[in-house]
Amino acid sequence: MTVRDGPEAGAEELLALAARAGIFRLALPTPFLVGRVNCYLIEDEPLTLVDTGPNSGKTLDELEQALAEHGHRIEDLELIVLTHQHMDHVGLLEIIARRSGAEVAALYLLGPYLERFSDSAAADDEFAQAVMRRHGVPPDLAAVLASVGAAFRAFGSSGRVTRGLHDGDELALSGRTLRVLHRPGHSPSDTIFFDEARGILISGDHLIAHISSNPLMARPLAGAGDRDGRTHALIQYLDSLQSTSELPARLVLPGHGDPITDHVPLIEERLRMHQRRARKILQMLDAGPLTAYELAVQMWGNVAVTQAFLTLSEVLGHLDLLALGGQVRERPDGDVARFEAI
Image (tube, rainbow, N blue to C red; front, top):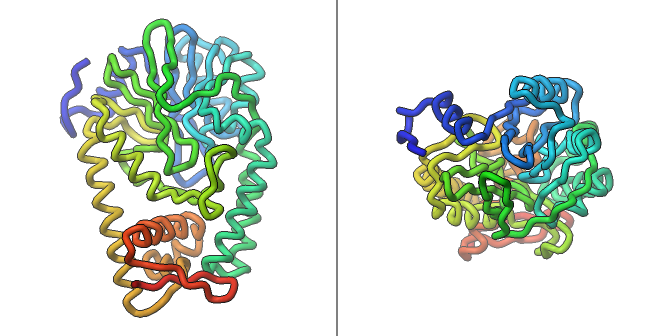
């Protein structure tokens, strides 16, 4: 497969290249700010769908229409592959698996989470509330965000993983082999799938061209270890990006937006961006100790209010990075944590 570099190759040309390799993008609607989610139909044996989209009637309708354009029905699917735990990627799992009887392949750590999705989502919300209170988000704002989070749970679903995958496994289809690579950071379960023979990487939300994937704070998945009660997502993510930069991928198919042909310089720029943000936060702390929420408000203003958990995750990730480098330390102040430069 030949892929021209950079902007010379447009999105439609790159999608046509993927289609010639039997991989078709199904861009489905979501209720989230990120917009449409990319699911991928792999025309092979077994007939495979990578990710499902959120649990909504509109998404299901468009999925059925998209499959019909390729001559298939949901009932024809034989394998469902999941890239990670977020609702816009797994929400239709229960419906599709029930209608198709397809095998479900996902990171083995994701199995217990999805099997008890309602409990898992409730625990995620409780975790988010505790983190927001600990790091200075006003209680009334945290309560509003809790109600929003509870409403969004309807876009997820339970499901049974019938084939647990491990880092380094091979997922063999009749016409290709996908290398399974665990890349935690954006979520604890982020998994990418690399067709080494063709140089095609299905990246989920691990790497997206038009936006930086947010390393979101999360509860560690059962069996994955527990460090201070939460994942240190940005540190994990930077390690994961570094590993992905070493892959000889010629075409990256992301979970949102257009295909990528220049993943190495894109990753290098993302690494530099996070270093710049860490330095900016360190400069803010020169004026004295601040909570993570106070830092977020200084950096993003009202966005830190409307998207408090997302921006808090970003700031805490950079504080973790600075603490690892011995430049920042946490200073408890009653029930709230403040951070100071060393």
